[in-house]
Image 1 (cartoon, rainbow, N blue to C red):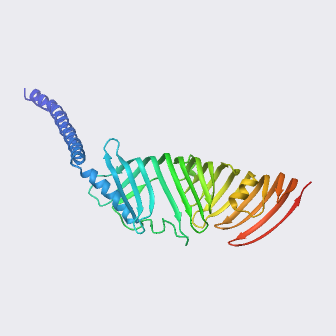
Image 2 (tube, rainbow, N blue to C red; image 1 turned 180 degrees about the vertical axis):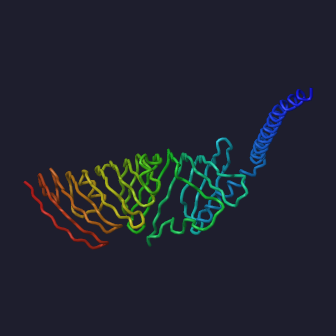
Image 3 (cartoon, one colour; image 1 turned 135 degrees about the horizontal axis):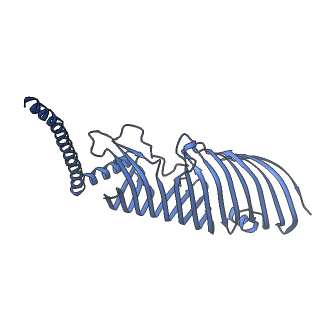
Length: 356
């Protein structure tokens, strides 16, 4: 009888251990569920109370302020699902000069935050997409060559917010670009601009993120001194990063003529470029726009290369005209090969020409 009792008692021990383990697993699962519910409650009350809204918006404004940019908007709200900042009638100014940098009629920036409620002083905000409708951008140089972006700095010191743009896609519609150069009396205004920017397909082959850029503009206006030309259309396709860009195709069509450029910008900072040119001109309209003293008429074509840095460049091209009128002198089937080096106001040129 004692041996049977021992067998029964020994057989019940595994069952008790299994029930103990199941009870422990249940307690752990309930604990995890409680933690998840607590986190959900924290997130819910953070958004309801405005804590997350105020935190993210304050970080956004503080980051811009540290760069020298003043920001204000009629609507500046945080959406919870998905996380997004929504802007209406937003304006960005140079804090020092009060010159406008950009404005946005409607904007939406979607992003994710790493460890929002973790016990740490810094947060990583990864921008996923940006949509702008009715945006305006100003790039203005005064008579001394100083731009409206002259006092804007890129923050490099410690910050509580770390913005990441590697995966960001940007879409711009119904927007405008305003460019002015007081030194050269040139201005350019494009009021119907759209753009799409997304990570390039070949991004993994390079050390830093590269972006495919597609920009189009319609009915732009250019002014040189007091002379203007309108109805300028343009498109740009390029792959770019912080160092330079591969210009796949840049097309310009206007009453003055048309042009296609392709090539490479190897350095944004020193603006080094090596471009291929191909186009045609209405010589009468081009001559008037440039303010040439001689009366010019007829048509012209050009094809060649443009290479340089900033305002110093060298051009090698083939020029042609089936009909050229110069001070009432008619020249037919004109062709020429030219090369010219220009450094500021100095230039040297040579070439050969032939005509019927």
